[in-house]
Image 1 (spheres, rainbow, N blue to C red):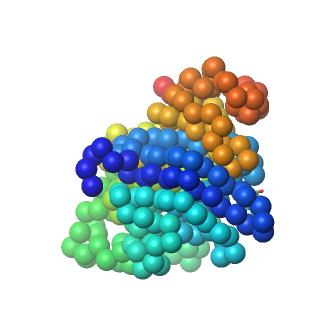
Image 2: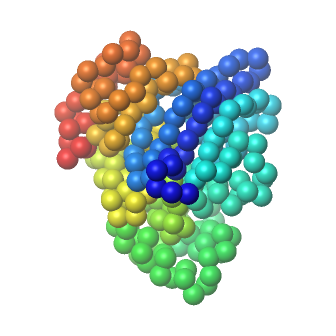
Length: 263
Ligand SMILES: Nc1ncnc2c1ncn2[C@@H]1O[C@H](COP(=O)(O)OP(=O)(O)O)[C@@H](O)[C@H]1O
Ligand SMILES: [Mg+2]
């Protein structure tokens, strides 16, 4: 696909579960190399929306609309195609990054196995891993550690290193920094910015923390009760229009911190 087409383009996405309409998004897109923030209160439908991109919504959910990734329809796509995309072209970084690693595998082995699984040729693996560790500034010595021997921030870096090693085009981060303390949050924000700068990776950053996202994203979509209610640049933080955005700002009265993160 050409550079004009958004990498991710969601249209008229409706997700219903148990007779409730939980997501109703007319449009949401992420361009190549763009960082988009999706911010809303707990229960707004953020995780459900993300899971639909990867075809991982609960089995009893009904989904309509379109989820184009690099011009290919993912909504209702065969499992075979989704497996190709999931984890490799679209990587996910979750709040509990440590839990996403395999407890019985050293971090290095975990990354290596994922590369094998996605059929990266043996001859390329070493170089890809070295490149990824450098990209996320992770000490190679940590590759010999088990997940329980890593801090929360280090585990996040391992998850992001895998995305780099697999050459992921889009990273979906779901409350990726919420469990971390403030200094580590700022480091992860820096890491995401670096990832875009060095690798050209697109990111969709989902969070309830408007201040963190405002310091990081090119554009921000505010979601409430499953729908986008406001969108704009990071200035939505200083000049919110919608009541929900006001509330999100009020819940995070740390503009100072947003500026710090913005650098
Ligand atoms: N598996 C599920 N079954 C039924 N309801 C669900 C399920 N997952 C999420 N929901 C409901 O969907 C809404 C949105 O949830 P979620 O996407 O997790 O919100 P967020 O990530 O924004 O906090 C909530 O009302 C939640 O209770
Ligand atoms: Mg969530």
